[in-house]
Amino acid sequence: MTDKVVVITGGTSGIGYATALKMADSAAIVYVAARTERTFEKSNIKYHYVDVTNVESCKQLFDDVIDRYGRIDVLVADAGITADALTVKMTDEQFDRVIDVNLKGVFNIVRFVGPYMENQGWGSIVTVSSVVGEQGNIGQVNYSATKGAVISMTKTWAKEFSRKGANVRVNCVAPGYIMTRMMDTVPQNLLDKFAGQTMLKRLGQPEEIANVIGFLASDEASYITGTVISVNGGMRL
Image (cartoon, rainbow, N blue to C red; front, side):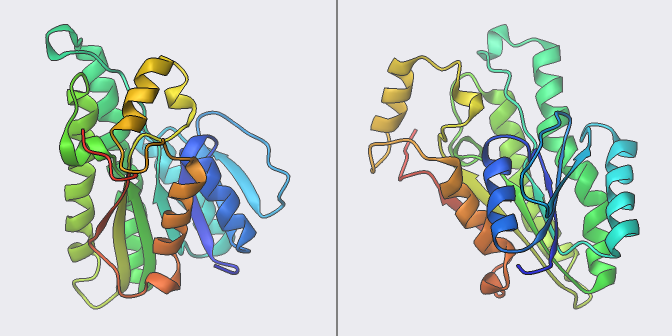
């Protein structure tokens, strides 16, 4: 990853933050993009504000990186939220907000970076789905819909951006339940239940997902594209 230009949306917390640190440790130039600012001790990590639900904000991020470095080698589309409720109780605001961030937000950044990589002739895009995008989950119809759609978009982009011979790879990581800030409000009894649903009998750590993202983004995964890698400890919902 030495000197590769990496953009990570949702990079100031959880999986995105762990990925930023891993990429920086590999000597990449890392642009961490999120709505909430965070300071980093590593000089090769730079923060950039972005609201992935806003097309102009995504374009500004893209333009700023290209203006400064003239290329983007890796995009990690990690920004995401939850707003859980049973279908009978889910409000339009809950549904629409999750769709806007988790689905449209991924499209909004890739709509600039993907075609650019195609013209550039190379690049690696890693999207972040979820175990619920593959298996579904009660109370998360909005979230699981977006994460399932991310998988479909990933497979489509893998075909689209390489169709003219460009070495552009697009892959997806589907984490299980990972101990990020998103899990702070989950009662301990449910965390224990989730851990019990895995073959490894524990929940995952952000660094364990970052390791897989880092691999897919790197040249070590040079013959992997259009693939979803599930990193969930053998979870069965």
